[in-house]
Image (tube, rainbow, N blue to C red):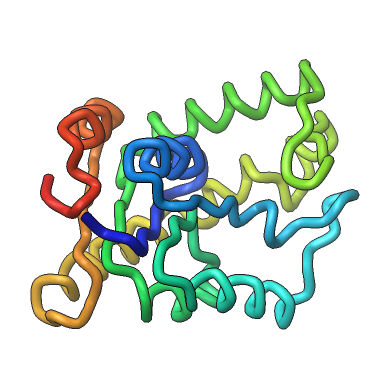
Length: 181
């Protein structure tokens, strides 16, 4: 079983939910990256502090992160034993993101350090919905690059690339967080 796990995928793919489920199955502590990188009022934590927080976690023997921002992704990548990559089609991930965002706007559920999603946030230039479209291809390409690197570089983390929610449910149900799919 892997003790240092990075869950990675496109925006809206279910990384946080899966990270929590892997943690429940394995007992490995999970750290929600949004909680580490956003303060109340949607104030982004300065890069140096984000990097320090991620470094402290990744220096440990057991952890799960629910994403890796590209600006500090080298830190978890240097220590991860397993990357669980959610490589879903756009219609799956965007549909999930749209439903989740709409529900949060309506019910005003508190997320990451007391923040709330609002209709204004959802349609803003820097909204998570627009971010999905700006980052989708890049994140999918990164997953494929990591998958290829895992084959050629024995020092790189194992990669389990999951291409549908059904495949993810099967993988998790079979107790496969150790890296076989």
